[in-house]
Length: 256
Image (tube, rainbow, N blue to C red; front, side, top):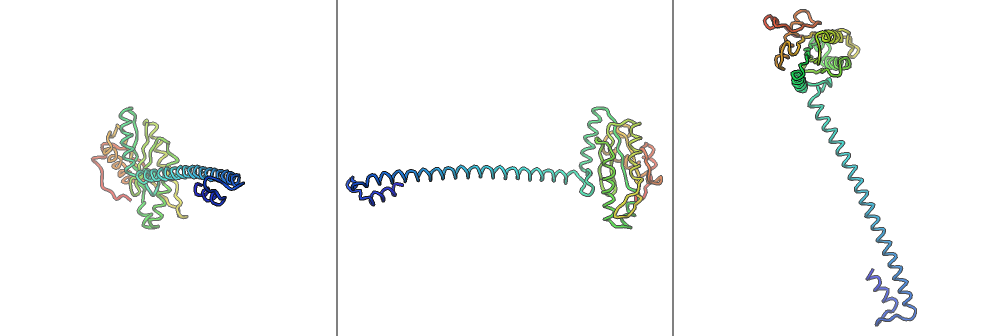
């Protein structure tokens, strides 16, 4: 603005501190106009800066929210990959063993009983050999879809590998367990429909009770597995409750 006023002074004949007649009023008018324009420019600039600052803040908040949402999704995805069986969506072996440790610790503290059921599908290898592994995989998915909605919220269902599953019935009595186990095995006695193929695939179950049969993770799993093999040996599609005698009479069988 200073340079502009100097140019105006020169145009209006300002010399030796004096204006030609009438030019002083013109100069004052020009100064007022220039000041008003300067104020408008300053207001525009301030408004622009304020708007830009607000927009930048809004953009920052938007990016921050998106980043947090993306991070939360990534964390959730990581947890799923770490804890869920990717084929069926139920707990995987590692997550199940962590859960079993927690249940054992809690049951020791509260003196509550729980049951561990070792499930193995009968003739699953024949399904894979006859119809292919894709059908076998979809059968495993159907198992999860059928079992999960039919167990209690506090119970645990996990796939520990191949066609082997685990059921944990927590806080049980002997009487309550019988009903839960009967319901569980009945879920496998209805045919499975996979790709318009009807599959009559049952399950063999071995059951151990904490702390009656074992009171640590390794022995619980081993003894449930032993009882499951006895179920296979007896003709499949049934439940065997662990007994000490099974440790001495176990025969090696072909599990299919």
